[in-house]
Length: 215
Image (cartoon, rainbow, N blue to C red):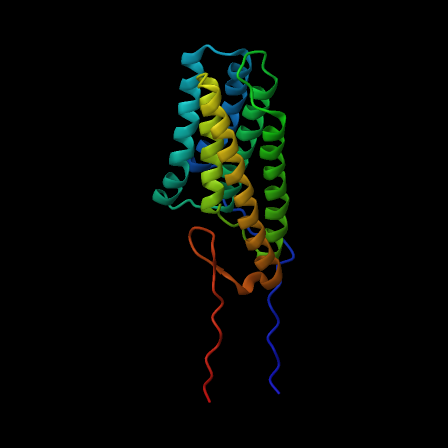
């Protein structure tokens, strides 16, 4: 009777690596940019500086991962900072569009969905990191959800028509719900199998290879 090899456990979080790198600095700067961007959105402008800062934040999001790969400084800190910056930006910007005196504003249910989704993903991410022993990358559905939220925010900022904004809101809500389901499926697999699973570069779970018989 063959004994089964126990699945390795990871009772602690992984080595985070270097914090102060150029790539991590870009991600951290995006967190700092959230403050003036949120203020400009709440006050309704001025439009030029507001969109200039938004463009700068988008640029940091585009380049931080690429700089990390180019400079060979990919770290767990980078994954955490990148995801944290996106979640803080989404929460602050949508809240500003909820309570600002100008219109059009985002509905309360949409803002709560966006914030609660990020809270759920954060808690689930911490639990699965402890189980897996490393941080996972964002799924494509999550990246698309973030882009959809940004598109909805821009539509509200430029005062797009009511029908356009409503279409953006409902489409984005559907994408966010779909992403929650995808993350929940991955979370369940990770919590069940732990470090026995393998992930591709997009964070998807690869099929577990069964050992071949030598008899």
